[in-house]
Image (cartoon, rainbow, N blue to C red; front, side):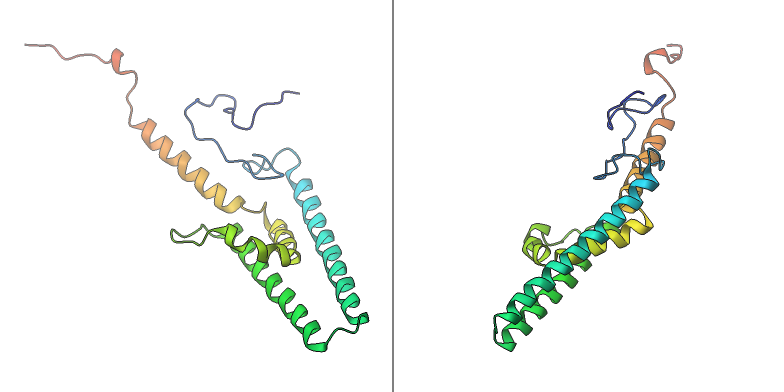
Length: 172
């Protein structure tokens, strides 16, 4: 079994051809859905759902602790609202990152890191839902890769061969 580097060109491909960008947990198997792609996608979907369930259980236990410590009702309500809003925002931002290209004037994703930490259940749910369709981010990577390959083919098709071997016209 040969282990080729994900950035090495496939057999018969030129060194200057564009190479697909690897996706976390999938490498470049998303290009042709090889190397256990389906099993990996199913496993990651189930893992993300399991982590979301465990996170929900953890949040429930935390809320139960607030409830048993006789914390004020308004404070318990604020905690639930904060987690619900952060979960919804984290799920939405994660889903959008997997399905749409980032706009030119996009806000830096690191500004939302704390919201994603608090709403971690939403991140896991968005990952699990996207994994049921394809590898998260595959649509965007495929679009970029196919555009780069098409651009490369157009560029190389215009060449008529090695310039030194061209026949030169007769000089007068």
